[in-house]
Length: 272
Ligand SMILES: *[C@@H]1O[C@H](CO)[C@@H](O)[C@H](O)[C@H]1NC(C)=O
Ligand SMILES: *[C@@H]1O[C@H](CO)[C@@H](O)[C@H](O)[C@H]1NC(C)=O
Ligand SMILES: *[C@@H]1O[C@H](CO)[C@@H](O)[C@H](O)[C@H]1NC(C)=O
Image (cartoon, rainbow, N blue to C red; front, side, top):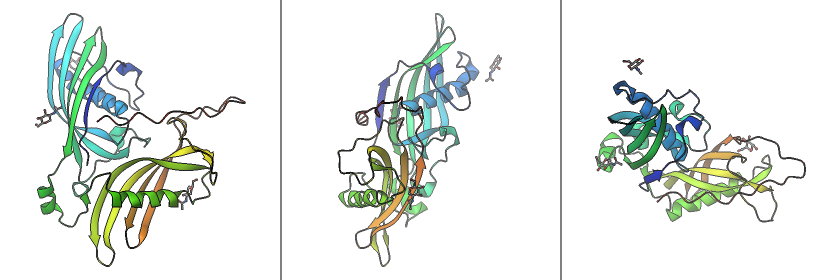
């Protein structure tokens, strides 16, 4: 699992976000830690352009420094990775956290916020991620559980490619789908099957119809259908299972007459 460190300078205001349950106003009062942490977690998820959504676990710190017109807030938060991938429409607070036997990932984040004249903003945050349990702890919890492997494992990716091909044999889909991201990859030994690879993959709808040989582009992220698939693969048996959920586009505004489907460049590469 690739560690992730994010350092971002943010200019977008929290008020402009579209949280399902409304965010409580962030204040400079001592009892405002929950509202601040909630707003910060919301912003971190909004900015996270790949991987899974995170949910607040514990507020480790909340320091307020009064300044003219408001205050500066320093937050220390522990977040846990949920089962909802970024493309999943469910609000992060309603997503389920990975169980112990599924190698949950946690993030510790340092967040700086400003509150001026009642207007709150996240100005900077930095998160480090790690597996909540070490490999050694995992052996004692679940010795037989599949182990996490690199998302670039060649054998695992061979399986992923075959899964994408298989996915595209579904003629009910109007358009071709391409691989957007590999979310998680694990491996485990199964009697009579050998090494088995499990992956969670995200596919994005492309502009060209099924079966077409023309060059395909992913449809813009807000206008594309996405599919989130769990798959398993073994060298000996090929694709053993492929189960997908489809998510509709977030933007369903119809195109104007004669307007072509807009082309979006690939999303920016994940923050190193
Ligand atoms: C915080 O305290 C103030 C006044 O002491 C009160 O009005 C407010 O409702 C409290 N907020 C929370 C979230 O408890
Ligand atoms: C996360 O926790 C580690 C260990 O406690 C610490 O060294 C690191 O600075 C923390 N990272 C952030 C971004 O808070
Ligand atoms: C084929 O695609 C449709 C959506 O286009 C989906 O509802 C259906 O479950 C898919 N079938 C399989 C076997 O994956």
